[in-house]
Image (cartoon, one colour):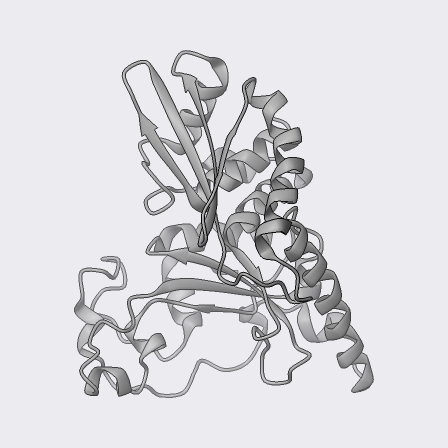
Length: 295
């Protein structure tokens, strides 16, 4: 295993699609564009194209073939096709198992035995295709910036990523689960007739300064992370506190189990994993613990 392979596996887990054929397999990786303007008013599409050039320079020698690149308004897509019997493809398929896309993939147990640097590379690949760092992602005070890693539908992948972050000593500040108690805790949307409102993507939230060891290879995200991490630590120091004492805490080291939320009819929905289906939760921490992200 090398860092380039770890990065590629992280991208595939984060937003990949695997189309298997009898003799060859195509892997496609999508980099979504939530906004077309960067936080510094640049053109996102231009930044992504420049980033893709650097990413291809790193990955194409590993893959042994050119990567196709297409860009649409809402996403940029990297893809490649390789024979199934080539070593690289055998390794990729071994790591992804029977998964067809990021929606049903799990992080292979072997990844948790990677070196620290390989885990960092895996997480950066994952973050480049799932992560966002925006001025609007603050927590209470506007200088308290966070990175969001967005995971559609795949509850278990959220836990896998949180466990891998813990392995490299990066705490998760919060998880916004796609659960009715979290996304519609007071039933406002349900009572307004939007019964399925809560079925969104899961969001893993991490303080900007804590995410610096992973960072981004996508340029506009990298620039925003550097600037916002500085704003966060400067803001905490201005309050007379030590940044690491504020941000470097795991949820089991912090008080509070959430405010009471009334029962929601969606608690029994098949969208929810069987392990927690039918249970009522007042805090994201309780869901994380029951699904396996714990001390």
